[in-house]
Length: 115
Length: 111
Image (cartoon, rainbow over all chains, first blue to last red; front, top):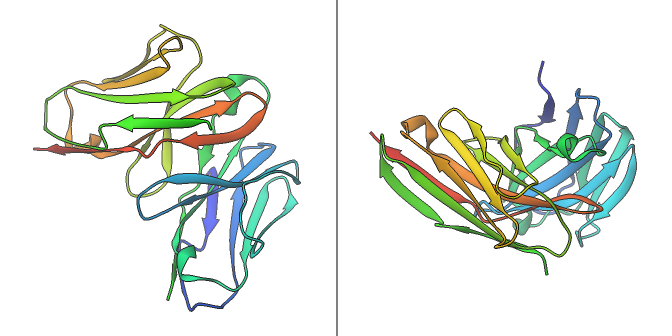
């Protein structure tokens, strides 16, 4: 009964490769997010989607392309991976509306290592 | 620029001690402040605070928000080794569905 799930949990790849990370939530939320956590544990928003529509894009390089096939899924595709892309990527979801419902729930993270 | 600063960055105490973690913020259109606990994996939600002066409590953890002085504290009493984690403070801005995080406080509880 996992609420927010991500695959894969670990991803080790060479520079220049293209990779995807998948996220699914079964909470019935309308909004999903991608966050990046760097080596200093600083979590920063990358994208958010509301009901399959992009609403936030925080100056992320064009090599990162999110895709939301439906409101329960938000995938992240990364082209031409660079060393600096190594980080933990977290998916999250929430239900906008009243303040109380806006709590964001996080997936387990995908640890990406680019060699 | 909206920002949130947590202190201390790192704290080591003994089991049974009480700790207070601080979060100060500068936000133009504040909506709510959230505390998360991050152990090895996903940040897990602790509290959401929207009103000043109202303490939120969950077992040994409690938190309060001061919207005039722009800070929040997270208290943990009678700490246990299982409280060892990174504690993250974040806020939501009015009209923007994103969390802006502080850099976290790494709390270590020694037996």
